[in-house]
Image (cartoon, rainbow, N blue to C red):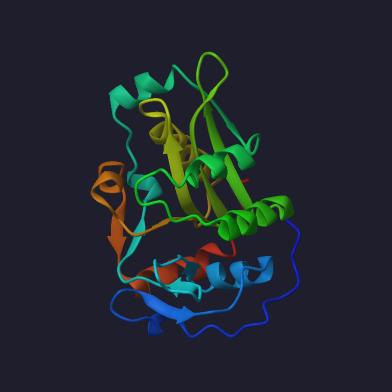
Length: 219
């Protein structure tokens, strides 16, 4: 079971008070208790270029992957046979690859990376690793799990389909664990939509989140 850190010292505004672009607040810190309080309230941090204080978001709509509707293609399932999948075996290398500043749209700062590594050490953040035939890390993803919420933060690949294989493995694990679960991807993108992500109104997301928090974790 994960270790509960000292409680958050900040009071976040209600998630539903976020502005048109989902921005809710600026400031606070990245202590484990702060991050967990935010995720439990439907809020997450995301740096913005040129903004010194840390932004916190609660977008409307919210990007989610419906577990019951997720159907990987036959070609993706065939591709998955080339890889070996593990979890929590290489969290640091996975988040380091996700945080590579040379990636388009890179947003994971060194401070954020350190914060999620601390959460992993306490048992709240998890990684899915995808390895190629030679034993090299081909792709993966990481995220935060609080009860039945899994907030997928970022994924990467150096081999074709490896990040998609990581997502398939994550969905299968969450689905097999049963109970009320939410796989949160924050915002949908055209790429995520091809993998089954959908927009969910914020009020519905918050309702689903409240139910999911009472579900035992899958990891």
